[in-house]
Image 1 (cartoon, rainbow, N blue to C red):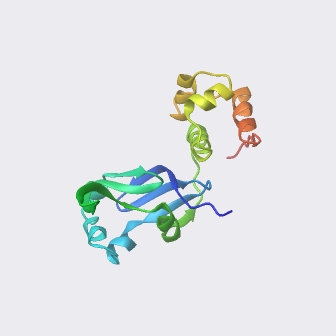
Image 2: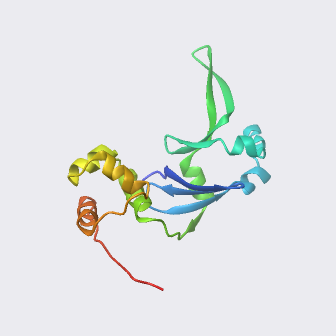
Length: 164
């Protein structure tokens, strides 16, 4: 079974480049300069405006733009939505990247890829939702026992490495 690529988190935004975490665990760089230079729609052309571009957010696994409204007719009624580009399209237009993220961010992405809420993971590892939240926001580092509980929830192992 093939999984349709969806975006689970925006890691960073700089100029017209967005680094995203996809539901397969990959971190990929989406270079919107390519999309702007070869627009497929009138909306793609509008992304050149940094104010519009910086309104990007995740909507149902896609990237959408709060400052780029589109209208359409549905059941003879005018409806409005925000312009979005599918996660599958962006996956195909992006490049893989290896980035080092803080442990809390890695835990958050692992949780999101497995469709768990903070509350669900907190229950599984026998901690509070607020404790898990502080870990995911990199405000507190988890102890080894907590890391092992999290790893076990996802069938992973903890690998601690010391480097220069």
